[in-house]
Length: 335
Length: 103
Image (cartoon, rainbow over all chains, first blue to last red; front, side, top):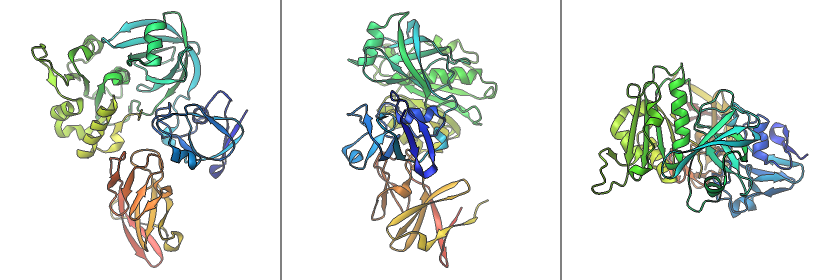
């Protein structure tokens, strides 16, 4: 089995031939930087000093010609073909609370959440707990490569992982999940991963900002925050945005939670109201709605967000403009 | 405690046009030497896991070699995206041949 050595710190770990260098490192409890896990964000770059690797995704958006010239590869895509010596800075921030593992999941139930978001519930062959807000990799048998999806449930034993997944038009993986996978069938799962998990020790009210595919982790976070004894006196604001009313989920997803309407506040908004569409709620983008609703108080909140690239950029601009301390803001870069 | 002075390194340890990483307590810092003037900022890029002491330096700008965003070394301001949050920079003083910051 290939051995990976980081000479600067004399850190060594084994990487099975069917694993990638970053994932193997994280499974060994090391703080190997990463975020998206699927070749897009570029956070898991390392320099290859010695050895040979194969890059799984040749067209990974987070990997450039310049990187290749400088012998830099993506840890999430790099499969070692020999023993390797690599250079990178390990950071404690990226160490896992629950080290990720591969297993299989059997689809036990499906439920439509909106017109294009569906919840897929998997029962794991080998249970694996995760922190609220984290994600897993799904590898359908008939699709090449892995896709990252955040879990929506809260679990102590990790026996079930639920994913609220937005269908991507012409998407290979969501096509397989929405069209071909039926109850009783299995997929490969790998996880948990991600750093945008619930901080129970943070002494601040909580703001959750979600849009589109970013619903799932926000649902896990709100369920966990409501259930947490440590967070019992916190106000929780859940902002969720869609383009039109049909992009919004049924309010019962949140209204079943204790504290709904008293300390849990739901702020749905749409960005493209139709004339005579009957929408009487808030109109705008979630970051603007959050600013309008909470004003300066936003700076004193713990903020979690997930959503499409334009939303993520807009939220980060708000963070910079309002001088919100970055350590209070949690998200995973998926692009 | 504010106004605390911390010695980081000797001026001779940082060649002109380069940077070194210095760790002091909880601080992980990049110390730059630009034409004999010393500047200090947080080493960890505000955008990702990059070490700015390892990034290429162009004039008074340092590039992060993870996502090719860049910062002004003297002010910490963002020069190129995807970085959006300015780097924290520190007040530097030179005493004899030693580089100090005040925090």
